[in-house]
Amino acid sequence: MSEQLTFSLSNRNPDVLTCIANLSNDEVFTPPDFANRMLDHVAAAWAEANGGASIWADRTVRFLDPFTKSGVFLREITQRLVDGLEEQIPDLEKRVDHILTQQVFAIGITELTSLLARRSLYCSKWANGEHSVAQSFDTAEGNVWFERREHTWEGGSEWVLTADDDGNSVKKFTNGKCRYCGASRLAMDRGDSLESHAYAFIHTDNIKALISELFGADMQFDVIIGNPPYQMTGGGGGTNDSPIYQLFVNQAKDLQPRLLSMVIPSRFMAGGRGLGDFRQEFLADRRVRTLVDFENAKDAFPTVGIGGGICYFLWNRDHEGLCECTYHRGGEAIGPVQRELDEFEIFVRDPRAVGIVHKVLAAAEESFEGLVSGDTPFGLATNFKDYQPGLDPGDGAVRLYANVGTKRVNGAVARSAIKKNLHLIDAWKLYLPVAGSGREREKTGIDVVLGPPIIGEPASACTQTYLTCGPFASREEAESVESYLRTRLARFLISLRKPAQHVFRAMYRWLPVQTWDRVWTDSELYERYGITDEERTFIESFIKPMEAGKPSND
Image 1: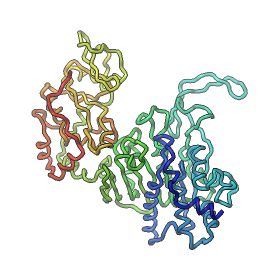
Image 2: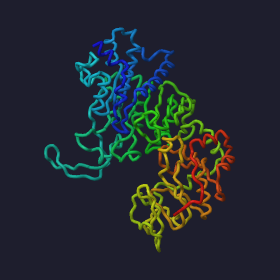
Image 3: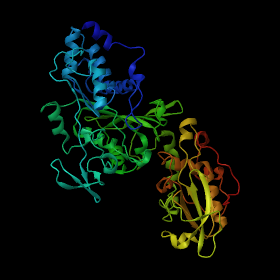
Image 4: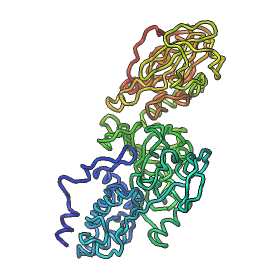
């Protein structure tokens, strides 16, 4: 047994947990070195609050990973405790048994990941198996719990007739959503042969009661740490899926651990579907003591692309104050810097941008947001097909700007098909592509931010591919606005509120309205807002120039 312990808990080369493939972009395996970064922050916070004492030398501290996958956090915590408790429990086998039975706990997110976690922690998929390095477990699961849970569907309106176990005819609803996680019943009510992804930690009205049920009535965790699932699968992928990581964060806070650390997508800092309340609460919570943010998620997870980047935070129940923030961009770490997270209603990730925002907002000018439409400005979806491609509009029709795939197409559509923003049809306007850039910034560190605006003439409309900006009195006014949006300062201000690729109305909020009587240049705008040479260099270091010239509506 001692030889097995020595082998199992020593450094491995290569480490198998650096080699396994991720389940998906939503259920990401955490690399061991990244997990150890987070554990270093936990150890430093514990020492600061406990007179320099080492958390790894405390045999009473309890750790929970409530959404374990590969078991990497459990394994690295155990290794540190094995080293730290050597003086208190000299016998290696007894020391390991104490740690595994009394200090390290987890909840698996699927049956597969619970087996992986047990294998990483106990060197056996069964905690009480003959190869397990733990000695005192009576159950196969040990302290790594998993049991299949089901979603709680509500709001169904469509149904089919089926039979229950006794052969009686019953109605089965086919739509609706889960009341806990918002999963679509159409996508996730798929029988017992597939994982339900009804994660136990967030499918409960009383998280404390659940923890008591799983691990004992008096269980109180000192540290909760891990990497939760990011979004509910089955919604089409990407931003079409509902984020759920915020539910895990809130549940963990309700358990009141002394320290809480999680990896979550950074998109919530400025946007994200349904994340407004979470963002406001998170940024206002002065117990968030550390925030480490990666603009490119591949700097943290090399094999995974996560739009908008990734971050991890450390929350300290017993300490309030400023947050120590570090921002990673293009291989450079900016910080740590002590910051108030809620200085604005969204979080400006790069601290070097904060002074520029203050200068622009100090002018107290009207917001450009008021000129920009909401999503689907004329009520015509992206897949709208009831138009004649390539034709100039005739009587009773207007010119339509649309996209088929990545190709821009023009056509003619009947006026009667347009139900929204009728006042914009016969005005001069701009069409602003919703799909901006994002991947380029992650790859190169520089960004164009927006797709080139298109001059929209009277008697024209667009599909959901674009937002509209206007109305304007003349083509000359529209061209002035178009020149403004080509400036680096304008696109820089938009980029600060743009969490991923798409550009929606609220992202124009910090952009001021100007007078539309000239061709705008960065030099004029820099002077207008007192932007220093150093700030200019910073802006231009990651905002690409947009080719100037007369805009086209061909």
